Length: 271
Image (tube, rainbow, N blue to C red; front, side):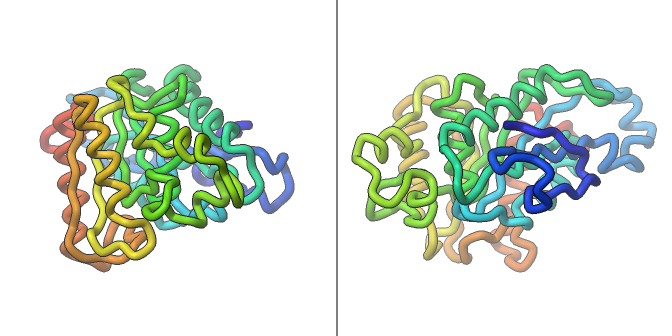
């Protein structure tokens, strides 16, 4: 079940105000997050308050919690590029994985269709996921009936098979002893088709939590199905870097992603 919230509502499921099976979508429209930037003459001249792209943010956390530094900070970065954003606080802990995918689909559908006082380009609705959030984003983008138009993955969990899976994410997503057919069905590299959206992927080669092979497997599947993609693997860096504020070399992923988003017309030149 999806509940849509303003980013300043500061709601948490721990308060017991709604059922445990609720996912919360916190909205970060550019009109609120970058109010000063939107009042300058260039912005008025270029879009005059018209529709902008949107990117849905899925933080990581191994399906046990949500990593805060992979949520709002990512949304604010997207806002700085002139992109509306929303952070999905999806269900963690005790959940049905099919409900998670439905909540992602419902969020994408709401963004494209729901009336609001800010405007979204319906065919420019992307999604970015980190770590376990990258698994949820990639599996929703490959198996869902409602898909994003493009996908960004930060050090994602992709395969649920040994030896490359993240055991905690697999256990929390499928249970302690999942059958092989379930592992196949929910390993997103095995679900890529020609309809998978264009994808940007980055991670570090020495990630000790989620092996780099996850990203290589997904990139290989995209290549086989002739899906456009861009892959960046940095030589060194711990898992879960987020915006990589403390790692100058890996922080290059931000301008690289901005350039890629620009190629797909999500970012205007000079923004």
